[in-house]
Image (cartoon, rainbow, N blue to C red; front, side, top):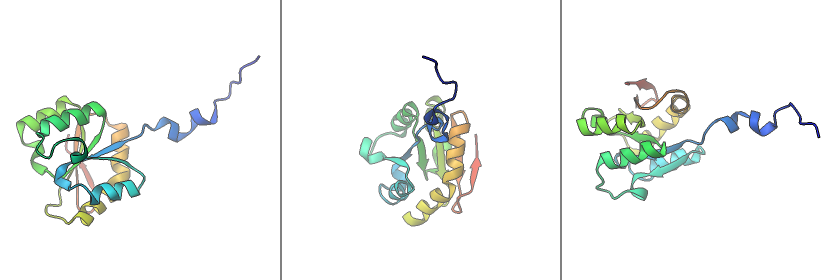
Length: 145
């Protein structure tokens, strides 16, 4: 029997080539509003407190996030300045996006991440980890490293 040289529809579709992304919502963002907004956009989301104790050290969950390939969302702007967390981000090859909007209500934080979602997904798919980027209140992204 002769084999077809034409690729199957499944192997040539864009969806087949894109790995499924999982967003990890850090406890600093709360456990409901941001996660629910992302899920409504069809995204797979893991919330910090569903996997880790509330008081888990950042280095612990950052290490697992990197090992699992989760995309970290946070509003802890100081994460890049603390030596142990900075080292954990890099060592675990974490892809992280940090909201810079300060004290925003949950709905505003969710909206910022939704606005940034296409660019976050593009960076996550094309940039080799580790990387750290900021997300502004308006959803603009700035790559820090």
